[in-house]
Length: 431
Ligand SMILES: [Zn+2]
Figure 1 (tube, rainbow, N blue to C red):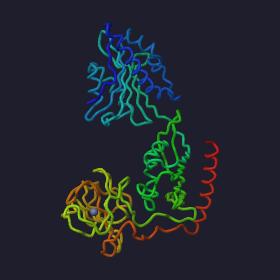
Figure 2 (figure 1 turned 60 degrees about the horizontal axis):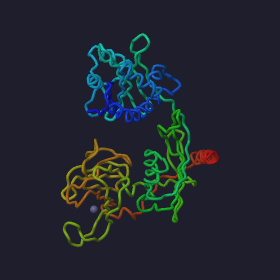
Figure 3 (figure 1 turned 90 degrees about the vertical axis):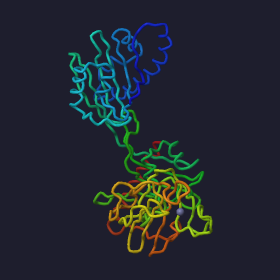
Figure 4 (figure 1 turned 180 degrees about the vertical axis):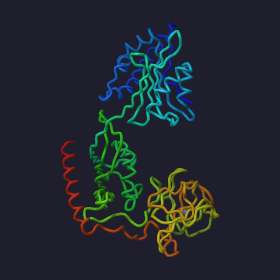
């Protein structure tokens, strides 16, 4: 199903006056959406301007040619054909529009929430498409429109993006995620940041009000200066009372990217302490009253509470040893990382695609989704670290670090580090 945001047939009725104001507001909103394409420079489009430049013109068009502008949000199962038929466009006209669209876009694959804009001209001998715009993603759109000779033309418009490094310095107010949102940090960067520090810092527990974070990262801006895509974090810093952890991006000669402290050390560990993002530690390793059985029992894992469906990551690279139902553990995954280390994940809602016995997994790869299967009182992940066959406390366990930089890489790192320092200095001057 799709939602009509505006569909309005011109006819003079007393109620028209009450329609004008909402129509004006909605039209301004829609014409703004169109503007982002016409301001592209590369494709200054006369036809579009003629149709949409002012509200006065819009109303004039409404009463004279009977054009109707419709913004359509694609819902499950929608097709462009159906959208056009719904606007009472004749089959031959629909065919012409689709043939034109096909030159630039395989429209068989409409996604949910994809945006489609339509301008329909209503004339005595039928309804015509004056313009059809399909957004392919947030930087590319395809336009089909009638040219001066009344023939459909097709144009693909891609916004030109410029890479610009962006510096954010902010103080934690109420949680890292809220603070990031308020500072305009994109979700993809917050996720990257969480991954970089996931070995050392538990964002829920360790980051408090007034702690400081600094992130320097690549942003891709469109002509309007709006961030449309993000790249890598180049530098990041977390400062609180206990520690100050600085990380520099390092690009190896083969192009691989990794992060190191100013001394060239990695904070990555062979295993992550928290194999889930944004979860709350709800029960520690140790003795406790068992929530279901009632008696005092050793809790041989760590519980993380989060909503059902939250992705669970492999805390280290390795091979899946078990993936399936296991009694009170419910849906359960066990990963072998080395002859010494093994990790277990219990009460899962589901397994990620391809996670079966023998599958190889990378650190940070999503292996399943948090649930409440087996003997579980509510949605949580029960996480166990097994060292030489013994279940250990994952939160206090000393874990081996990834290898530090050596030899030539150490020298290259020093050069890249100085460059990054200069870039940050420049960026902070411009602020
Ligand atoms: Zn547990």
